[in-house]
Image 1 (spheres, rainbow, N blue to C red):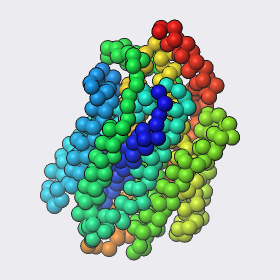
Image 2 (image 1 turned 90 degrees about the vertical axis):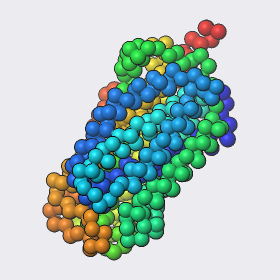
Image 3 (image 1 turned 120 degrees about the horizontal axis):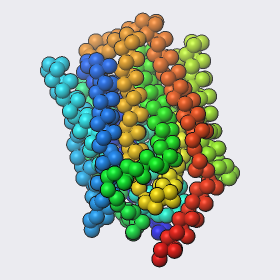
Image 4 (image 1 turned 90 degrees about the horizontal axis):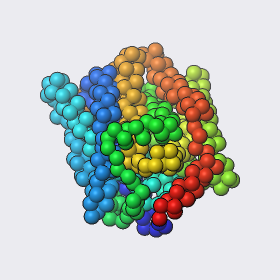
Amino acid sequence: MKLSLKQKIAFGLGAVGKDMVYALSANYVMYYYQDILGLSATFVGLILMIARVFDALNDPFMGILVAKTKTRWGRFRPWLFSGTVLNAVVLYALFAAPAGGAESTLMVYFSVVYILWGVTYTMMDIPYWSMIPAVTDTPEDRENLSVVGRTCAGVGAALISMFTMLAVGFFGGDSEITGFRYVAMGVAAIFVVTEIVCCLFMREDDGDRIQVAGVKDMFRALFSNDQALTVVGTIVLINMALYLTSNFVIYFFKYDFGGAGWKGDFTLFSTVGGAFQILGMMILYPVLRGRKIPNEKIFLVGIGMALFGYVALLGMCLTGYTHNLIVLCVPGAVVFAANGVLSVLTTVFLSGSVDYGELKSGRREESVIFSMQTFVVKAASGVAIFLTGVGLDLIGLAGNTDEEAAIAQQSASTLTGLRLLMTVLPMIGLVVAVLVFRKKFKLTDAYSLEINEQLKARRAGRS
């Protein structure tokens, strides 16, 4: 099935909306509940980890439900629409927490609402990415659609990074509580509109290629797909590194970089990072592919770029150059550009693992395999934010729950710890990702084409 420009645009808009929602939750939930509302950072991180355990049980079953769905509107779009509407409502509730009440009440509220947010996001995210191998069976079209989806997802995440704190100040004035409530409402509305457009124009053409098995058989196929598991593990490590940076950097700008205009400086840094992440997807990756560089080589280039950026940033932290915004933006741009390239590649690799699984087992498990991506991306953010919470408590960072008070001053040891956490932890994750990839990954460009040809021959033999 040949993809039209209209379909690509609709798919891209869906990615913009859903990643605006995800980025708002992943990047600001710790700051909102710990620094603004006053909950323990470790408690917030612990709840996020518990939610991820629940998702571990929920996501694969959600993938099975999607795979078993048959309606006049298709297999994926009913879940995409219903999950979007529910998640938009829960997102608003997440950033409209009751302030001023008992701490125990707020703890219960946060725990329940965040778990609901994870469940409803899963409902729409699994069918969204599962559409890639279902709407086209050619590797080139899948790669193009993966680039569109990941690029537009990067745009959505970048918009949140660029404008959230400025929008919070604009709508809330001196009250960040009010500001976050209005920002969440606006993001939820954009989310619903973009996913409706995606549902209207995307068309599924999976025919008889998806064979739905029982739960036992599907899990057997899932865990026998060593390449899906390898890609998933790599996604966890890469995303965890980025989320660690995203969660720590707002504290860095507020308490270390400091100054009355810290929100503007943070926004500029985030804007530069977001822009380079998009450029990594839209320009750097296509340029490298245009030079006929295999995807597996581009992956190692991306990891190398990210590590170089973190090493440079660590050097600045240790030598006292962290108060020059222009200098800080240089390694930040390198890290985010590399992440843009890696985001596209991991989606391409995961789509390829669907073909690999079909060749091995005779079943196409799009929804089950892509449910793993949904789970691991959330798991990565959960692990990252848990480490963030524990790290903030260990270094003794004191938050600003009184919105009328001056920004709290931190000790020298606290600031040093913050700088190390922001750079060293992500580097560890990326190094482990390289080791996993080099040891386990087999879906090279050449092997992926060979798999595709074998599947075409097999399907032709059935007809």
